[in-house]
Image (cartoon, rainbow, N blue to C red; front, side, top):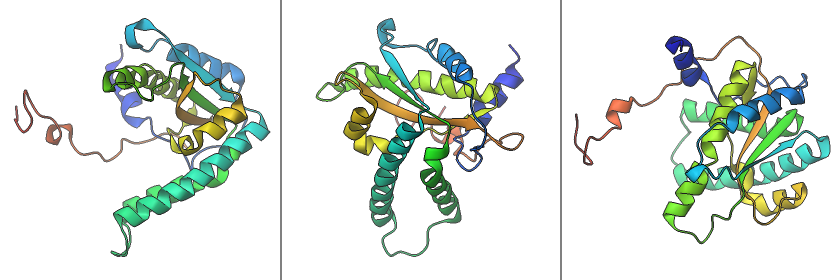
Length: 216
């Protein structure tokens, strides 16, 4: 493998919001290609209980966008009060992120495809092991989809905000009670040429060796 190209793909696949090209349709064939790659991801004991709902109908996209907006406004009001209260302005980095999230909230209905990643099993009232196994069997597939999309000039945004209204979303999309929604990926072509690695805390500062607090 070309390690440099692989590393570039892995370190520059970002959540896209402002850079979505909302005027350009996405061929269904590209979504299907990305999903075929997604199902090569690992799943617990190879159960392959992942399920995907590709939403392209304008009324369904608008319905999900309404639920998303309701959840976003409630979530951010609560988060803002809990994190900041009356203690002055937010940091510029946080403000940029919030502005970007608000942009997506206002335009989600215009994003040409929304792909909902689900798993066909309940994850409530089960053990931590069962929860980890269930979510661990779908989230790698979602990430593989994002990587495959990137190589095709498509951007995605990893979001779970609408899950505050998961029951309403299930009704909108006709999901059976056995299906658990996990992550929603809005998908569109992106504008601009490329993305850069994000600022992250170095892994060396986050890694413990053999026991918590021990350095290598």
